[in-house]
Image (cartoon, rainbow, N blue to C red; front, side, top):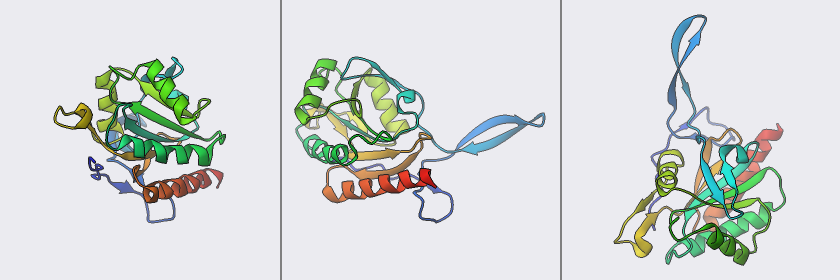
Amino acid sequence: MAGLLLALTSCGPSTNRLPVLGEKQAVKKTVNGRDVVDSVDHTIPNFRFVSQYNDTVTANTLDDKVYVADFFFVNCPTICPKMKTQMKRVYDRFKDNPEVMMLSHTIDPEHDSVAVLKEFADNLGVTGRQWLFVTGLKEDIYEIGQKSYMVTAAEDKTAPGGVVHSGAFILVDKEKRVRGVYDGTTEEGVDKLMGDIDKLLAEYKQ
């Protein structure tokens, strides 16, 4: 299994709140007529993919949602079956909660067409739009994985299935900030994720 990219930084005081992960970004803005540089949290930028329902999915689709992102491919012979078993636990645990979604990106768009993703989702027992399986341009998928979600996603002809990818589940808050990275291949990792989803949802109720 490819290791999780743990070169993440947290910010903010030590509290019971989940940390915000990723390096802060410098942004220039004008305040009282003067140009100043401010730092802002790392966030997931806008994107454009296609779901198993053959419709467009953008960052706006996840507005006002806490969501879990991951990367997989249907013919993955190694960690993906474990990941999908664990993500199904998340789906079942938060099913019908309108504040929670799951977003699974295929890293083999040449094979994983809309029809293939729909069949895959159906076989898992996934209905509705709470768990979306998305495809798109390979370069866009790999870029958002590595630069935005900060996990491994790359072609490697020597790897099983021809690609190498992280087994991470990434927890993203309603402001599109990464709030946690978890081992999506283990029950323990996903138990921690589900507990942190509860914690994150509680933040929004305070």
